[in-house]
Length: 394
Ligand code: ADP
Image 1 (spheres, rainbow, N blue to C red):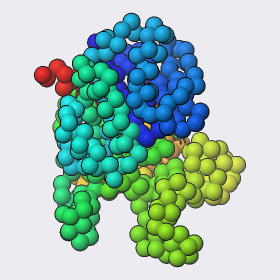
Image 2 (cartoon, helix red, strand yellow):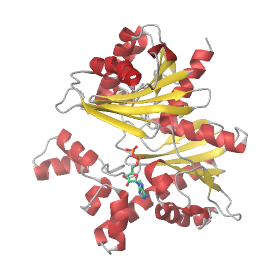
Image 3 (cartoon, rainbow, N blue to C red):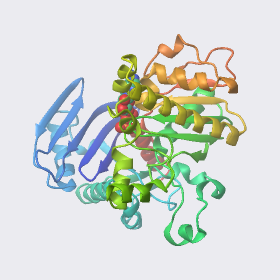
C-alpha cells in the first residue's frame, strides 16, 4: 500500500511516497517557488532525479500535476495506488494532541491558528484543500508538529508573564519539531524494546531543538511560543533577553518586526561568526583559526549543553541521549564536544564509534552512565506511519 507524505509552506510542497509494506521510499520531490517566477518541480526515484521548470501559480496547480508526473515517469501506474495522504502541519496550537483525519473543522482550525505560523499553515491549508478537491476518495490525515508537546505540564509551558496573556491571547510554549522528536522516541522504544525510559532528543539541524521525554511522553522542549526560542541555531538567536529588542529598535531605527527578523535570519551561527550559518563552514573556519567562528561554535555547544543539563535535572537522570538532524547525525566534533562537557553527568562517548555518521548506532563507551545514540530522523516516514495507523484504526 502506498502513502503520500507531504510538507508544504507558502511557496513549496515537498513530497515522499512510501510503499508501506516495506516502508521503502518509492519517490520524493518538491514543487518549488509556487506563486513565484521560475517555479519548477523535481522528482527523485530509482537513483534518478528529474527537474523541470513549470508554471505553478498556486498549490492546486502543483498538486494537480503530481499524478501526471508520477505516471509519466512510471513511478505509479495509477494514482489509485496512493491509499492515503499524510500532511505535516507545523502549528495546531493546543487543539490537537494526536494526528487526525481531515474534516472541515480541522481545516477551519488550521486557518484560525495561521497567525502563529503564517507561511507553513497557509501552505498546509492550500495543499489540504487541493488534495480533498482533486482526490475526494483518498483519506487525508494531519500530523501536527505541536501535537507531541501537548503532554508538557502547565508549569513548563506557561511563561512567567501576566496570566491573561495566556488566557486571552494563547501566549504559551507550543514547541516544534514534534514529528522528529516523536520519530526518535519511537526508534528508541524499538531499540530498547521498552517504553519506560528517560530520553533527551537533540534535533540539531539548520534549526534545532532539545526535547525531554519520559515514558514516551514529552516533558519539555526548548522551542517555545515560536521556533525562535531555545538553543542557538544557524541563523536564529534562540533565547535572549527581550529587553534587547526595544534597545536595538531605538539604536537602529527599526520596528519590532525588523528586529525579530534580525533574530530569525541574521543571528545564531551566522550572527556571531559574521561568516556562515552552515556549521560545516564554521568548523572549517575554526581549523583556520578564525576567532569569531570559534566563538560561534563554542556558544552553539554551550547552548546545547545548557539545555541537556537542565533536562537531565528535570527528568531526574537520563537513560538515552540521541543526536539527530544534519548536525547531530553528521558532526563528529560537535557530538564529541557536547559529550565531553557533560562528563560530570557520567556521559562518555566512544571516540571511535563517534566516527560513524548518518546511521542508527550507539556511540557511548561501556563506562558511560547514559547510552548515546545517533539516530537519523525521518519526519516524512513518521507522517506516513501516522496516516497508515489512523487508516487501520477505522
Ligand atoms: P533543516 O533544519 O533545514 O532540516 P538539516 O537537518 O538538513 O536542516 O541540517 C542542516 C545543517 O546540518 C547544515 O546547516 C549543516 O551545517 C549541518 N551539517 C550537515 N552535515 C554536516 C557535517 N558533516 N558536519 C557539520 N555540520 C553538518
